[in-house]
Image (cartoon, rainbow, N blue to C red; front, side, top):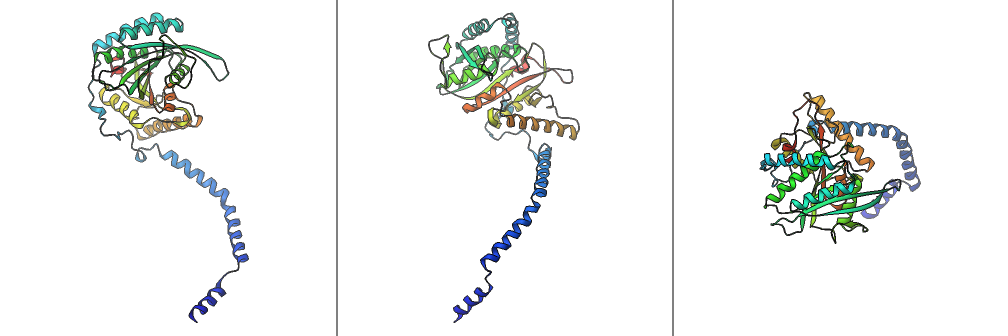
Length: 353
């Protein structure tokens, strides 16, 4: 009796299906009327929230997530002798910088072999966006560290041409002086690869493809392309001209929005700030110096944010180091911003640090 009475009670309260569907239609029609206004409101909410991100109260700044790195406790071995070597290399580079690709490659090949590296040249031919042929010659050398098992390597590169269009004279000279330093010390746990690329991004792309066996048809000065282990990280050195610099720009965006491990960027920033005493900026817009007022600091952070969004939206790497990210190599470019007198300039000594 009780069960039957409950069924009758709920049956009387049950709304017919047609009526329920009509109620849903009315609710949907009413909500559709608010969609344009809600879309505009949510758009402005998102834009305001994006503008709040550069504010110091909403971001943690630069910090190291891997506690074992300890970049602020590094020892500096790049001394006066290495600075003199870099200056000597710069004078020699000035004599060959106006030559063709073959002349520059032969010079680099001889210097890397003299430094004790297993060096070779790479001749390549590529096509640009308009299907024009781009020819160039890369030079690279590999130092097989005594304590390394040959399974991992670090890449240090420098293009002949800077991103500014000038000759990357100081960058290549610093690279060669570091080659002497790497060979002089025996405590490295990874192999070290030094690379000087021709034709900017085309040279880097050609070398990466050849090293990872993606493309063939390349010719080398040796019988086969010398190789090491898996490249764990890469730093591209871009210091145009022969002048001094006032800050260090870091470019880290890769193709299609790829980004390197944040600890690589943080390590470079920490070493530059506390060891080399060099101010750093993201990208090369010169807005990296913290302003004296909170508003100036906010504008600098906002400029960095918009530049990163622009590079990621376009899908283009911000430097040739960004091409390495597609091969799962954490890579960044360090670029010297020309001194203007606003800050204390630096040269080979702090670059080598």
